[in-house]
Image (cartoon, rainbow, N blue to C red; front, side, top):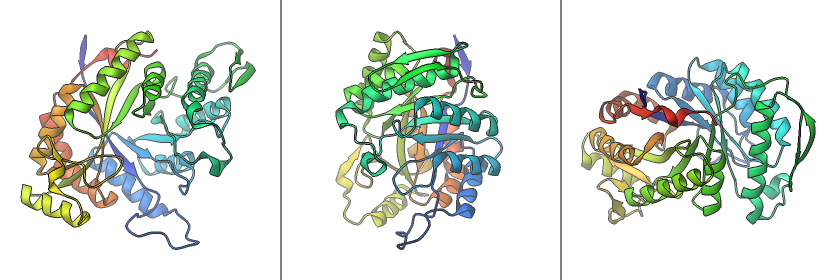
Length: 332
């Protein structure tokens, strides 16, 4: 069974203007800039905004609470690293914020790679196993009608009952990571598996891997797929490439895949370079593989939010079919 629904577009919310390195002693938070970016994303038609995680960033839940007051419908995707809080306390905090956000909150699992800065000395190979327990406790805290116990390797809970649940019932969970362990974790818990941008063939393989893992976990069809891509636009293809080459003088146009996908600019996600029509065709090709959510960003958060909302998102909504399986949204 199918239902008409829009493909989802996610923007990125920085806590400060990222053009220049912060001078020593500078507070990495600019409320006015953050609010302007949030309103630009909402005005431009983005569905959600990612509030990221890294060691220098302000607390994501507090940022989300501020952004919720600056916007009316923009969904908030908060990056969260399991392990710093007990999962029952995290369940309480996210549930509370979801009520203040009027049910607009979602959770993205994040591994920032340097957990020792915050006192977390878990061996790297155990991160996914601990996160698996963490998400299981979260799910039970949001769903159990009776006090429950949990006795795992990393977490023990006795008699927990959450009087406050998320306004949505439970929060959507976004997971990522290219390793087999990350695929298994997403298969067991994720509503959406987010991939870094790469050529079409690689994305197809990763979708197939996670789909197979989800089927083995008894969740066939429960995981949707998202893709993170940088975008550089121009009124012509030549103008777009000129803009791209100014951003990184050492990048080479020889690193082009699938006509306009360039791997030369960003270490964590590839970049689409071209006119809105060309970029729209590339997004549509990913959608045909099964990608239903796109995390879209450029290199100037505020300016790009305005430009993408004016020129790119309308084109994408025209070029990408709107029919998505209802099963993809079924609770588990």
